[in-house]
Amino acid sequence: MTHEVKLYTAMKEEAIARYGRSSIGNPMGYHDNDIAIMVRNNMRTPSSIMRHKNQPCIAPSIPSIMGQDWYRADSFESICNHLSISLPQVRRDMEAIKKKRIHFVQIGYGGFGINSLHFMSLFAARSGVYHPFEKLDVYENDEFTFLNAMRIYKDVSKINVNDYQMSKLLLFEEERNLSSHVTLHDKYFKIEDTNRRKAKTVYVGAPDFDTRQAMEEKNFIFTGHSGNEVELYSRPVINQDVMTETYGIINLPWFYMNLIKATAELLSILAKTDEYPKDTSLFLYSSERSLIAEAGVTF
Image (tube, rainbow, N blue to C red; front, side):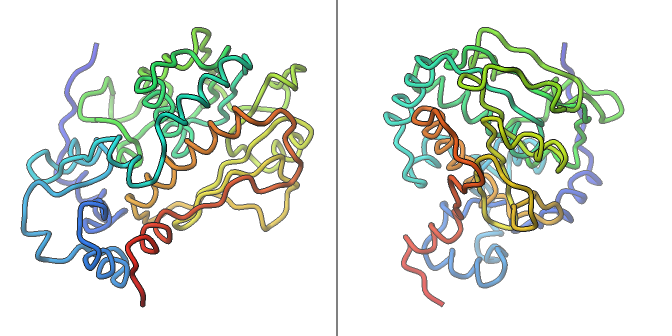
């Protein structure tokens, strides 16, 4: 049973300090010139826009924290359209994945993992392809706190929480439409948790360096987000060039758009790939650069 969590002013102030009030809006809701202004000013929303209520934003978590009167989340379909994601193609990819009977293992249920699985569940619901994975395992031993709430593409205003702490795995709900065999592991993933079904099992996530090194011979895709850029990297050989997640101030529009685009690409990779190449970048993308280029903005 859930109960409403009161989101106090102090919590809002923490969110603003971490992300910046001006970096949580949706640049797709503004005109091209506004995009240029925001980029030049490190995503500071023009004051003419800030005076109005009902500001467009990316994720449902933002209105649920910052106030429904001030922010409204754009539809998932609208964001996909702006990112040139073809939902019919996503449906075909998910159908192909289902035929391959893939065992999907998500290593970590943090910023990338929790959002990517949720985006997959939204794709599944909109395409009508339910349970595309034969099995789904999710590994996470960390707790959820509201400091990270705005990095989750969900309404977080009503959750079951004590002292603002809870297992991240308790946020796994809608995602059960991804497989009829779901196992949530309240533990940190180790190489001992792999299996011998190499051709049918794909591991996705960002474990520690020792585990990544041990995963070089597995079908493993490392997921990284650094700055305003996202990357999917196949079976990385550990070195300093491998992208890692960064924390601190995050421009949420680019973060969410990057992850939605990367999720669609991940589904395409899963649908079309049987042998994963070693130490190969599969996808490198920045929604910021792409959107600005499409808008014809020059500096």
